[in-house]
Image (cartoon, rainbow, N blue to C red; front, side, top):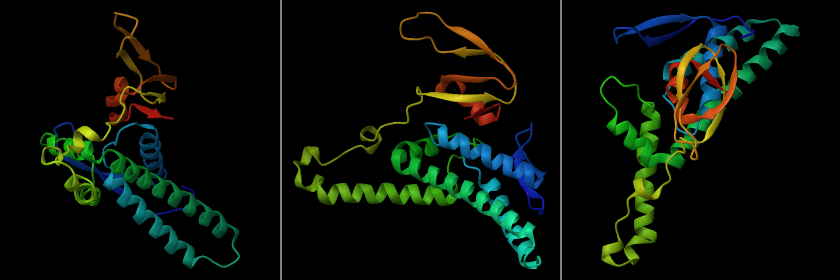
Length: 226
């Protein structure tokens, strides 16, 4: 992040399952935002919510805006920092917009996954996104009932959105870059092969692979979708 600013603070789970506060530099904060943005952009499913990163980025933007107001007019640095602020705002808005598009597209499955997650498992929805998804589903059900279902025979007036709305295609292929070396990654066999095989992912290497295979590595930050 080009402009100087306050350090961001985010919580992460420690090895005991608790949470610890991390102090992030502006550069590290932006790197995490961009990583979350690219992963969300290229993953076929809705990923874990990152509200702590969003909150820190918003605070950082406010701090940068305040610094610009105190800067001298005509200073070339002001224009450079202003461009940097607009770039960060674009990444942030694109990330949030991408998540909303997925929620609208897969809302029954998103809510079902949220409902069935175990205690301690990270949520894929922020509180605001959960409220949006819940209202979106309720409005969709009301619309279908008023426009179509009430005009149909009684035995056809019920519809399962969970069965009617397509699921995310976890078998689609994605490009990735390896951030942490991985060994013996099990690759799903092709349809015409009846054997399983493993591969090693070397640091910095790039691959085209089935998303389902590396979904846990995306969640852990070991790989970056590109």
